[in-house]
Amino acid sequence: MLEKYLDGQAIEAADIQGLILQRQVFPVFFGSALKLTGIPEFLAGLDKWTKEKTFASDFKARCFKISHDQKGERLSWLRILGGSLKAKTMLNDEKINQLRSYNGAKFTVVPEAKARDVVAATGLKNTYPGEGIGIQDTHAFFKPVLTYRVNPGEHDIHECLKALKVLEDENPQLHVTWSEHLQEIHVQVMGEIQLEILQQLLQERFNLAIRFEQGNILYKETITKPIEAVGHFEPLRHYAEVHLLLEPGPANSGIVFENKCDLEVLTKNWQHQIMTALKSKEHLGVLTGSPITDMKITLIGGKGSLVHSVGGDFREATYRAIRQGLMELKVRDQLQLLEPWYDFHLEVEQDQVGRALNDIQRMHGKFDTPENNGNRTIINGSAPVSEMRDYATEVRNYTHGQGIFECVVKGYLPCHNTDEVIAAKDYDPVSDLENTPNSVFCSDGAGHTVTWDQVPQTAHYPYTYPLS
Image (cartoon, rainbow, N blue to C red; front, side, top):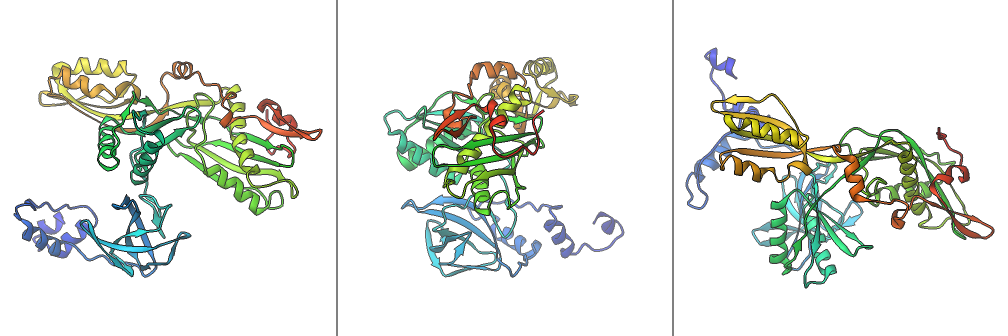
C-alpha cells in the first residue's frame, strides 16, 4: 500500500477494504450513541469500508454465549456461519425447541435461522461458550487460578450451589466444585474483581448474599515419565480390568485421551465405557490432590467378562488405574507439582527500579533487561501467582499511585516451592477413598482389596510395558 502511494498511484477503496479484512488496518470513529453524535458517519463508514462476507452452503455455527431467560430457561446463543438451522431439529443429539431472535429483552420465535443470523436456541443442555458446530472450538484464553471457599451464611448451601452452577454454565472463566466429603462449595476464579462481580450477580439474580473465604492457589500436577497404569474391579459378580498408558505432554496442553486398544481385547461397548469414564471427571494427582494436567492417557488393554461385567465396572477400574499409575510414579519421584505464573508489565520511576527488581527476585520471578523510557523504566517478566497476586497494591503504595502494573496468566510452570506446598497440603492419596489407587479382586467367593503396589503382580491381563 505504501509503495503504491509513493509511486503516485491512487489508493482504491477496495485496497483499504482488503487490509481491514486481513486485520492490517483498523478504522477509528468517534461519537456518542447516547447523543447520536457521529452515528451517521459511523454507519456510512461501515458501508464504505467493509466487505460483505460470503458463507458456505453446509451448516456451521458457533455457540458464543450461554444465558437464562426470566423463567430460568437455558438459552444457547448461536451465530450461523453457513447453511441454515431449523427449529425442532436435532443438534448434537439434542432437540432444539425454539429459535429466538432477540431485540433487547423482547424476542420473536423464528422457524429458521440462516447464515449471518444470531439466534438463541432453547432445549440444548450440553452446549458451551466457544463450541464450534461444523468448525473447531475456540477456547477461553484466561483460565481460573485462584480457589475460594463459599460461606453461604444463612442460605441453604445446595441453593447456593444451584445458583453458582447456573453462572458457571454462562461463564467459562468460572469453575464451581462441590466436596461431598467436606460439604463445601469451592469456586475457581481469575481474581478478586471477578469475585466481586460474582457476589453482585448472586445478589441481583438469586437474592443470595454470600461471602467467599480467603482464596488459595489452584495447583496442578503432571508426570515426567511414562508408566502403564492398571485398575481392577472385581467384587462378587462384577469384573473389569483396565490398562492405561500415562505419558507426559507439552506444557499447558491439558489432558489428551486416545484409544489404541484392539477390539479383540475389549469389545467396542467396553472401550466406549472406559473412554467415557476418562472424560467424565476431573482426575486428581497424588502429591496434593490437585487436578492432573499436561498428560496423554491412552487405553492400551484390559479384560472383561461376558457374564459378570456390568455397567459401572469399567468406570471403577478406569478411575483406579489412573491413581495406581500416579502412585507408581510417585515412589519413583517422577511427578511434578505445577503452579500458575503471571506475565507482568511494570512501569516505575527510575529511582524506584531497585525496589522493583528486589521485589521480583523476592517473589522468585524472572525479568528481561529493564528499558528506559524518559524518566520511567519498563520491566517485563514473569512470576508465580502465589507471590505476585497482591503486588498491584504494593506498587500503588510505593509509587504513590504513579506506577503501572499489569499482569495476565502465562500458564502453569513447575512450582517454585514444591516441598513447602506438599507439606502444607498434607495429602494422603491412599486415605482419599473417593479417589482410591487400590483395586478389588475376588477370591474364595468374596471381593478383597489389593493395594496399588501389589496390583502388577495380581493383574489378570499382561502388561504391555512391564515396570522396571
